[in-house]
Image 1 (tube, rainbow, N blue to C red):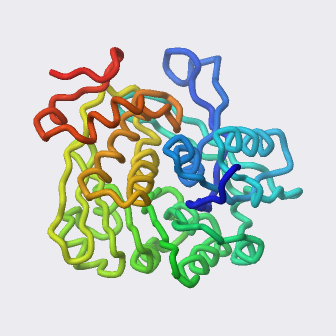
Image 2 (cartoon, helix red, strand yellow):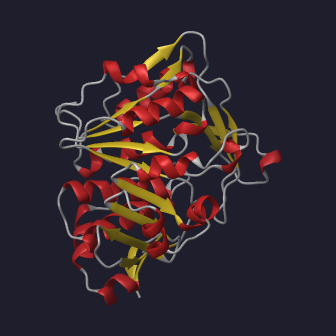
Length: 326
């Protein structure tokens, strides 16, 4: 990379298989291999948004691990701090794509990334890093991964913020107590969560009530699906921005895309509405693809929509024809 990373993303990524033909999953014979993982998805979006990023993880000494490093690196992400584990495999998952939802089947038990621990931080260079991005997936993988997340949250914060996306995956917590997520989320600087996830973990999807329960993060972002997103920052009043209307192809990965767009705009120091719209626009592009990382919308379209008044924004729709206005 030509510039030192400003955002450092830590967490597991896996090889991903999605259907390459139409039909019920048990009848599909052709599958496309790609890659996916919450933290690497965020990292992969950022270079196209003008933000240098790095992804830190562990992969197996196998073709899938090499594919991960090559493909994440090809997006402009710095992968030089990733390690290759000679004894553990790279994880993989299968996504049965559909516009109404995509069942996901994980094969990640005993993966290389599940062996990560706090010692990983000893070999990282934090010079120039403005945001460290984590998710609630990592602490569910193993005791050592939980210790790693706690160690990141305990780092000195001079000039660096920690972003924590809840990313609650119930199946990963069947043998662990998810109440630890309150501790981790509360120790972050920027907390992102879906309303369904927040309700599952904290029993409420009301942004004001969440702020009362989680006073620690300076920035709280509650993603409310197709409705929109609410931002509460410090003691300021909540700011709500409706989502862009999209003809959805497949929804998985949109939350990571939103996080990347929001973080990129946050690092530029833009106002709350612009930050939320930036997240929406990046998510909208990913909603139009079966992959976890979509191509950003054209810069001219983004600029127009970021400056649009509320009526123009509400009438915009992303479809096969691109962005159209009703």
